[in-house]
Length: 222
Image (cartoon, rainbow, N blue to C red):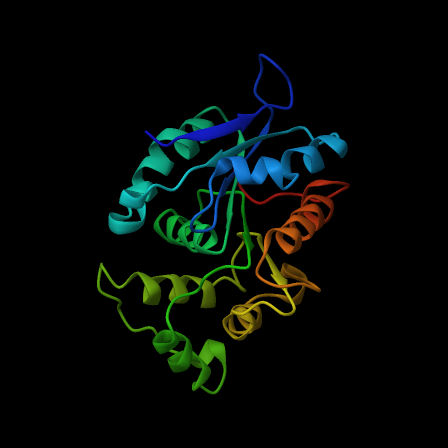
């Protein structure tokens, strides 16, 4: 089973919205708590439950996390009629994209902060295209995860799934982030000063909460 830290908006009952976040490599669910992710949501009095999942070495090696994540956290929440957002940071954000590619139309939205987006090979191939939408993924093999994820990204501008891409301006993966940003609508992209680190991710999380979940924002299909 996936180890996770769950923080409920209300003791003894489920909130109408669940946000599941996956950590960057070499981090765990406790790091989200230490970085103030729970406190930021509670300070805003948002009626959302939070689940921060752990990524074990076996998950990274064989991607069993995608099946377990869906079966243990996401699908049960959807069966209860809850709105489900999935997100992550760095490699966790990449896995969130992998999961969304496998389950199109079944999430309310994606929150990907500073995502790892594959190797230089695939990024270079896309960068050499006239523009990101002119790149052709072809029919990726079942195990060609990077190509499948990028095909998913480049088809999202015209689809209903809300995507929130949060990036630090000085992030070491900024080049690949710009490629993803070019594939999305401008209002899907949020940029703040900062590098590939927890202080920057914390600021991006707070802005995600303010821009997407507070006020009059309407989520996509449940």
